[in-house]
Image (cartoon, helix red, strand yellow):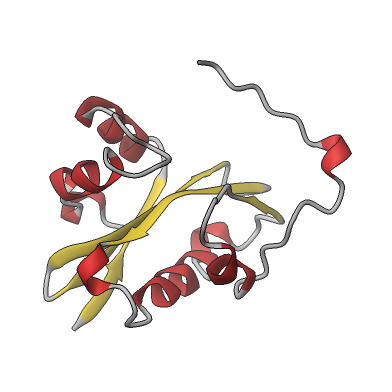
Length: 133
């Protein structure tokens, strides 16, 4: 049975850290950093029979803006529609109902996110970023 929860006490931080530290976007992130991101975001755990198989987090003010980060499903559970279930739970979360601007970055999952209304920037000239190395 698949469940999705925002209860942070259910999160298996070691599972999250193990996946993220080997991902292209969070390579080398420390366990302390992962815990800090969990502490400061709205988090969604994806579970199969109480074992965590996926994760996603939203940095948000709960009123205007939501930024989706660190979404994943463990490799052995992919191809079963679980990422779609997780995305549906995230975009329909009551806590985020007032957010009108959503953003994310991805190098390889455009197809998934487009199914939930994400597009390329409509006006990239007004968006700025600061990358610190």
